[in-house]
Image (cartoon, rainbow, N blue to C red; front, side):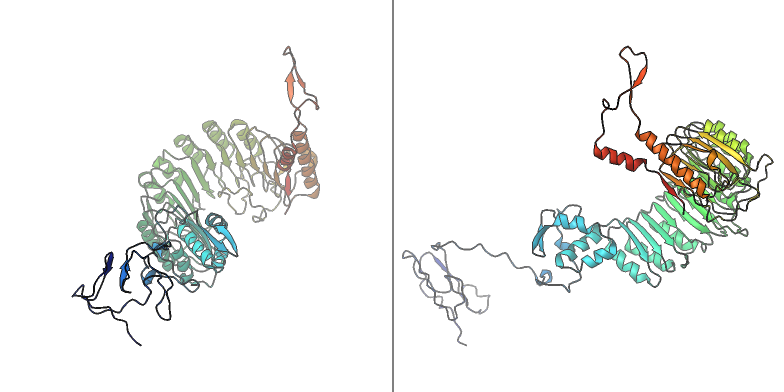
Length: 595
């Protein structure tokens, strides 16, 4: 191939042109000539340029650059090419990595500019619409959407990066690498919830600690077939290393052995299935809520008194305390009152059969601002209910005394009459027929999901005041939820509660339909599993009457002289619209659950 060389430097240079030659810079070596036309920019090979230069412009060599303007507009200069490492092919479906530098710093919180658009399926879909669609997909669907095209894949990856909460179910055959691969996608993860169907060990904790440096909330739920093998030392190291962790909830903690947690950021701690802990030390100055659920085994050797005794110094800001253990006793209550937790508002001591009226007196003398009190499974009587009513008449809004066989219908009526702020009350398995067997704890499980209801076999009543059949009359203006599950000794029930919306009558086998009166216009849900068919029909009919009575209410006005109030005629009262009527009917419908 014949090579084209530039003319020597002694050639005459026309006026108005600049010539660059190889001798211009003695340091630069010999280079090839220009293969493109100097007039039109097309390749020289086989090219005949038809563009003529103005007569006032002298003819220059092909190696010169003409400074005079051509008679046609020149295209804008091309941008400089990026280095090869930043080049991306037009259809790069096999590229599984996203360059972080491509995302600009001035983008919004979604990780992309909302003004951008892209073509998907022949139609231009804005990034904002695509973002709103993909962000509502569950993780499996989001992984499938990433396989549609390059734009969807990039959007899904940015969604993973900016995700703050992840709820993941780990199958039984999954390994730690499955969880690690999912967590690596979410670099900004703050809240993590795992439903483990496989075993959990320290490797899983290490994977979470490495992949989620800014984790604030972690919840691990363990299925019946999985085992939690995390020890107390491993859990303590995890909590101390995570400086941002504020909430920790973990199930299946039967292999801890000992607990020694120290954290300045932890505010919520839930541990369940605890068993025979040799030591329990909590050094968390900002801890506000603690829930400890122990196993129901009698040979549990955990020292609850030593555990509670140090809370006043190590956890002075506790507001909510929940302890479920058969080892709860009056000594534990005394240690809790000695801690003098001034911020305490909710106290739940469940399954403590040795908690008596003396324990209630100790609680009432120390903590006078309680909003929730749960003493389910204790041995308190109507006297303890009286002390509760005398100390917490204005603050107590939730009272749970299920599985307390020494409480009668008189004590329940007294509590509803003396506690005007009461909104929730659980009296399950308190009024029981001693002639019936109460071993169906699963069928009589309480409905309210307050997390404090025990599920154990009902004890035989110790009080001589119990009658075979009792009646219960409750009139309360603020009560919203009432649970009477398993009250087989109840044969008459009269309720006048305008705000009541949830009623649990499961296994009230001796309740007569003729002695049932429900004056609850806001009633929305009634649980009647295990009741007679006649009682269920009576509940449905009275619930329908309450709904119709609330719907047919007419407004009243006073006469001109203010003498008396009269009902406004139907044609003069403002009629609601059709939408309001549908909403009212939908709101006033009462559902009776029988299964």
